[in-house]
Length: 438
Ligand code: GUN
Ligand code: ZN
Image (cartoon, rainbow, N blue to C red):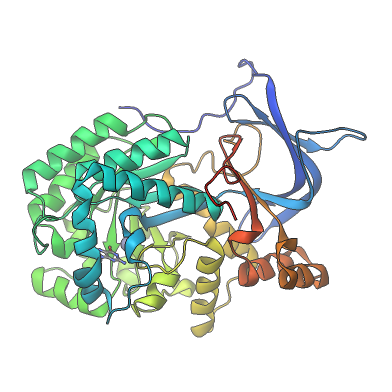
């Protein structure tokens, strides 16, 4: 089976001719503590969409894309979102379970229709590009057609995306509930069809423990084990009522996380959304198994789910929108929510840490830990051009800040899609050609 990687350019390998050069101040995220802005640097991109060089602009040099005065940063990554939930963003409810029942399940039930799925996939990918998000780990619905539409639309845009069919064989309405054996066969067919094709990877996606039988959950674990490189994603410990439900369904298990562990789902690099109500034993398990937490601040605030404990996170984590439980596609809103949630608990997340977990740190969730989405030779040319001067207030604050950290924090607080001047996907400008680019 094809394992999706982003190969680096090896010494001696044929170097393709430089296709285009982009010049701006380039943001380098070395670690959650260390970042740097390289003034007037040129990113050389080859025809295949890989970065070939990063160097200072030469005196008198003229480049194809001159963005001097603006900032180029690595593309943002969203390690947890539901594309079919575009149509439920902003639906008020009294918590997760009523929200799923009243809005989400009925909306998702329509995605057996390929044309409907295509229309939504196009809109969602456009919206991600508009907000500077170059990759995501995505839930489709329980219908294979929903995966077909999303994978095809991502491939058409040359985007590096990870997505999967949701599995849910119980406690789900007609039209959404799948059949245990068929759901596993469908998942396997979709892996064989899409994993490793174009810039895509497949992720096995049981919705959450309450809507899957033990047989389905075990089947997911076995399927993942038989396709090395194919990951698992699901939800865990998001909401008190959900946890009570899990306790009643799995009374013998020590915790919600322990259910997934017993059934073999805590596989290396699996992605677990929310992780709010976990204890030290769960954390130790997550660390031991090298799993990843997708933290979803705007969703947790919107649905009133709870506050993720950043101070105790001793495992890998990234920041995710969880659209449509999440209230925005914007990584600025997600980072801002994380900051506020940390503050409510007396904890401080620095601007560089927020930015790192929304980009490089989340690349790890998508399997690119050896070749994350930083801006360097041998990496894919997925980046954003940010214009802090695009609105008067941010222009004012940007110019009064004295340090890079202060400037980035003002962008987090005051920034939106108007400040994403361009989004480059595999070396090509993608935002300005959108309908109504803004
Ligand atoms: N738990 C199970 N399904 C979902 C979903 O669609 N959104 C969120 N936020 N939590 C879930
Ligand atoms: Zn979710």
